Image (tube, rainbow, N blue to C red; front, side, top):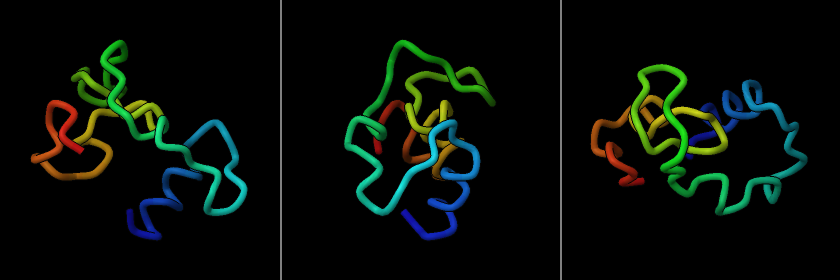
Length: 66
């Protein structure tokens, strides 16, 4: 993840991460129970509440392929 993306995630997340170890693997695991805040797709990235394409900007991440 680029520095710019990490900054955006920090700015928009509810939690305030402290240092580079603040994110866990579970923050990026596909969550099939939720739907994207932007487009309504599933699964979502728990850290952002958005689907893979809306979070990462890559169509290849569709369907939890991240």
